[in-house]
Image (cartoon, rainbow, N blue to C red; front, top):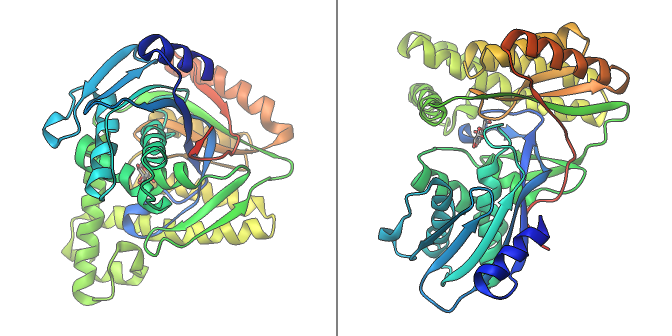
Length: 380
Ligand code: GLA
């Protein structure tokens, strides 16, 4: 990929650029908890975005996407926002850097990626954090790493219409080889947990289902949670985020909020606790408990949060039937992957059965990705 990027850069701009990279992410547990001030437990993976970049001495940014085979040129003022979806991420990162007092001047860039799109592996966060990290380095802005993650998050909010939490961009910026990171999304305290589950494999099965309305459905879930938190806050003013609420407090407002909001909140409150339980279990190498929590999360995401789909429920059920230790839908949902914790000796049989039975039922094959936990944003 490096070579292809540099060759294109040379042919377009007559020299080589400086190379930067960033990563997609997995999340072992803690889904839809980030914008509720709860815990998440992600890690960066070995696929991501790579970009060659160089200042060009003009007021314009010229970016070429190798994957789309398209060039886009834009200025750095708010009114210059490009139409192309992929370019809006880069424009957003420039604008959000400038809003934070950072310097950004015209530059040339060529980038490419190998994060499967729409699989729930945060290809967009990888793109944002690659450029946020690179611009910070090139223009010597000295913006700290959390703020770089927030530049990506605000890009989603302000330029792409997704009111996401901080998990994806955090994982993409802070990721470290061989480690998952537990982040408290309210206090932003975090801790690395080495993750080498002996005798197990972590594998993703991509249903290849993409939900068209995923971003509006996502924003709707967030609104439900905020509504539930607001109702609880009236009785318990200490509740800033939904994750601050006790389960009992949710029961107290049951009649005051729509049933749908109640179910969403019930899931979130349970999920925050499950992240802590999984971290405790990991410290004892108790993978059976980790796996059981993953199944509980799937149940919650499917029945209470309603972000699963027939294909993902099918894969989850099959995992259970084949004694896979843990399995659940991963990421925002509405399609994408399941993440599975599988005993090594069961791996081949499980993957073969998943491929065959999924194909027979849905008429297309799922994709299989073995997870390698890797470094996040960096200069190459
Ligand atoms: C998407 C969002 C994240 C997070 C997950 C669900 O990936 O970008 O902020 O909310 O969904 O856990």
